[in-house]
Image (spheres, rainbow, N blue to C red):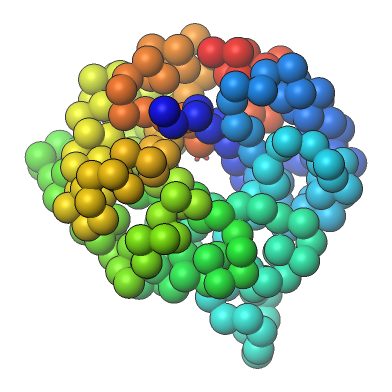
Length: 249
Ligand code: PEP
């Protein structure tokens, strides 16, 4: 039985004291909802303050990105080891905003996934098609390519720590949510693909999040789908009351 996992991606929002205050509210909420796993992803600038707030709590702390090297001449980058030292437990890799705006490729997503594992962070690996790809009937082909690329040479024993997030690009921050049936169709294919790569037993353990305009009024129907094990949420995770409604689903 896979536990539901809700992660809030705060993107480039909230000053450190604001992030800390929201983390406090999430921590208090999560304490009363032991059946759901929860994580928050503040900006790099907010990580230390949020880490302090979450210490000893059951809320995971995710970074939104990392570099694949441990250290070096990579101005502006942060390694997975540095994030771990700050108290991070998870890292988002391959978010579509990074793929679209910052040149992330399947290859760099793969390197970052390996770096996360090396540093002891749990990766949340994002995949998803653009509107043009969906309209051309290429959704499953695109996400399959992204998953195969991201998981290249990722050892089976690493897989239970990894979360795969299906985030159709056309649904992120647009208010256009995939229907539960559309999301389930892709999730079912992702689970099948994981089965081809790692065997059905392991595939049944990996959590698959859906992301893209998840809100309090649509979360329940999405989470009721058999292969949707949680959500990666942007906008609706920025306010304590809507985060609460997501966790209560
Ligand atoms: C995201 O940032 O991963 C996301 C899904 O954003 P939103 O919920 O705002 O669509």
